[in-house]
Image (cartoon, rainbow over all chains, first blue to last red; front, top):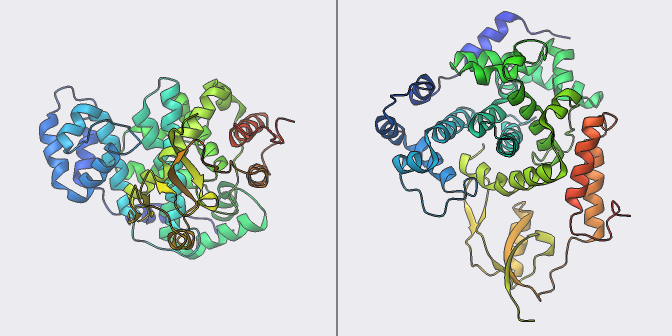
Length: 281
Length: 116
């Protein structure tokens, strides 16, 4: 075991590039009733790479819009500000890790899993009347710490992968065994550095007895969405496995066959398209 | 009965030359390999296979003989589900999810092992 020290976690997180300014701005106005939507739409439009992705998603089967969404301002008016914020954030975070390559567990594989989880989380939230955009973002970011760890020390992460393969264990278990922590701690630190709202940061809290109680349903949605993403086999890794679900979280969502089938189908339907639009590396 | 046109996602293995695409085929990079309305040829099927494309969405008429997923493919999918749940199926929540996925993969297929 080569534990990762607190200093190293801080260093890993500090090495992360900043998110585009517009993302911070969108979070800051989270609870602001008087937000100037027009001004924000203009600012999003100025970042061409970002707005191309946002418009791509707005026009995809993800939303199933009848008419073409041609501008950010129009996207805000038909999809709502909260959806646009989710799409901008998703595009910006994926962009940060794009273009990087490691030959082992690749960023592409991690993003595929993250996108599948995000889509399943959104579909679950929709079926139970929870906040879909928040579920989407939390699902997309649930393994962001893993991306940070791989970038920070690829060689050490290779140890995690080989431990996981030798013991046929989930990555989180291998992370704890090799690094002394699982990726969620790093993920929380990364999201805090990017000034994400606590409603999202806390969905990465792995201690169910603790702060998780504040957002228990979102956390349960993400845990189940994560298992669904593995179960649907969308990440394209041969040695993946479905993590153990907490019975409590499973029951909390009160899912039945009909809801689950719809969630599976919605997730599979948008998956390839959303991966292509976000251009997973 | 007259032939009605339907759109159907089929596995590339079941695609045949002459079929017409209902949706474009995009690579993960976003590059369009083939546009919607393109007719599949043996050559394009070969290229798609090499590019790792697994499914295509085609326009079919209902009396076209498009093979449903055959039993061996469904068996493969069910085996894969068992593999994915290999270390977690003993937990009630995981088993419930696994069984639902099995029903999902065998939907509309009457001879599925699950229905027996």
